Length: 117
Image (cartoon, rainbow, N blue to C red; front, side):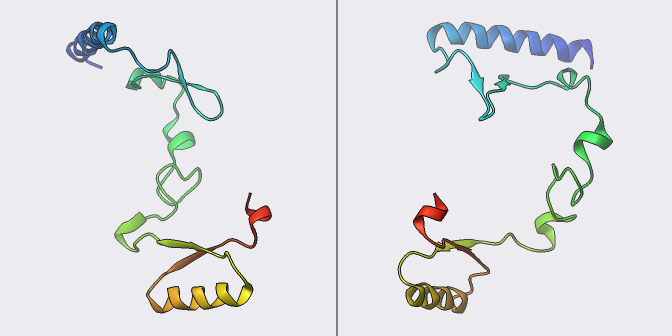
């Protein structure tokens, strides 16, 4: 990383600190759902232990950080899913058939509310 870029980062951090006096962040610390701390910004030097082959992988390959399809949505659009399944079995069947007739390409089935929750 160039010294010039590091100087820009320092200036940016000072600017943000000054703005935070007038307009503080909503919380002192932000975390993921696993309660891991989340930084304001991640820089290339934050990834000292980052191994490109181990941690990033190839598109369509484990660990799927670059998508589940090798070409992602260039070859096939994502599946739009319609959530359906409340009501009787007959009503659900009728709804699924209607959705498929309308061009729906994926259905997410809710068997019953207790199972779903």
